[in-house]
Image 1: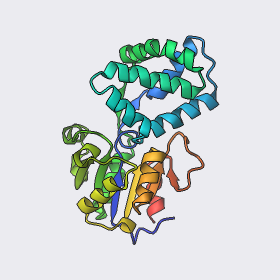
Image 2: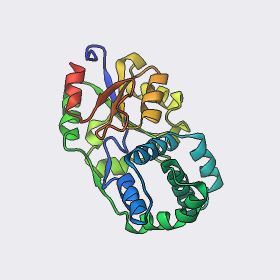
Image 3: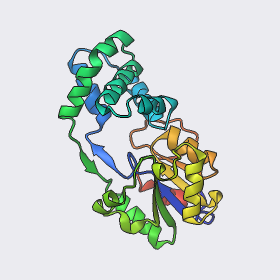
Image 4: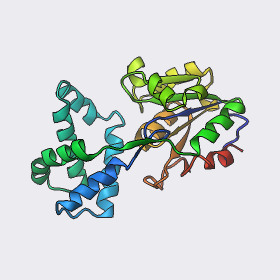
Length: 239
């Protein structure tokens, strides 16, 4: 239980937390690999998903790949796919052979719809009406205010922050320090909710915030922090 008396601000991650893709890219990718004869177990799938989360937590790997493939997005995603296959347990040589085919499949056939969990809107309204300062903190490179407006989320948030705006990305402490300045609260008064353990929990805790992992599919069941599987669970957590 987290005492709501000490919390003055609740900050959210965007992608994977408030904004989802239906169907999930990982599910479609696994279905494809199995369709071409790869034997991918549930353990392989989970290990791969952990790797994807770690990779996009501004890892050294994605930083290196971003520089190497700066002007070649297609090659970036082929390389990402190779890394993902290896994380699943596919031998490196086979992963190299399959990467272009798998990446092309995802590019052509993976056309997800954007989904916001239904329980997000009443939660945000409750938090706003209760006087909490609300903010969005994302590892995106560019501002995304128009997208938030199109999703009808803009009215809830005091600020919307992209890592690229301050040249700091989760789990770097600096992006959270900047968010605290925008919120006007101290770290101990601020809760941060996100789906990526490596970026959101590690980063927010590093900056002194109170981390809450949003994990509806139990990808990190043993995480050393408060865990919610739905936004409806946050009310009880704040009592």
